[in-house]
Image 1 (cartoon, helix red, strand yellow):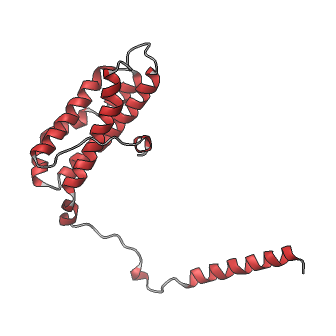
Image 2: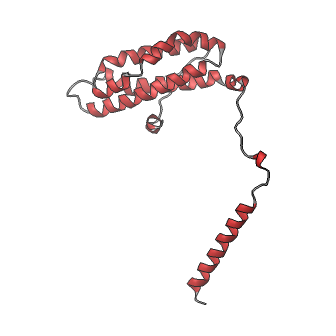
Image 3: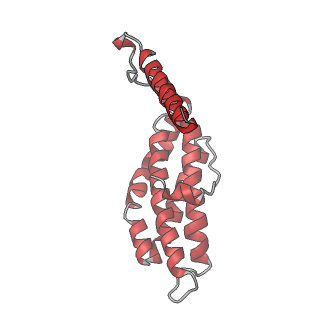
Length: 177
């Protein structure tokens, strides 16, 4: 028998053996199948402050790095070098910041002090929903709104004992849902 045919038969035999072994390893007990279990409120609250600080910090970092800083540098002005790229990045950063601020407000519900401090800010966070599309279209009057809401969330966290520091997300974090 030629060598290529022997290799083919050997590979086919190994594949069949692995397939048969993998299907034979399954258990007969259907009740042991993966069933989702709910998380208790204690588990949800366990890292509420940490998750709040992380999400709010990412929102603050994205807002500062890709919205406020280019705006102050004049990148959004008509005719500015790199304006289109800066506006697209600002739009992505705005969407990311809105998403992380919503997550931070949900995280705050797990800690009573944070929930009390962040509750008045939920309307301001919800008002940011349409601002990323305005940024992408070139409406730079909304930059102050993002900066104000992020600073209010940071102040609310600080007052509840969860100091928020800016963390600049990577470009891949901005584009991931």
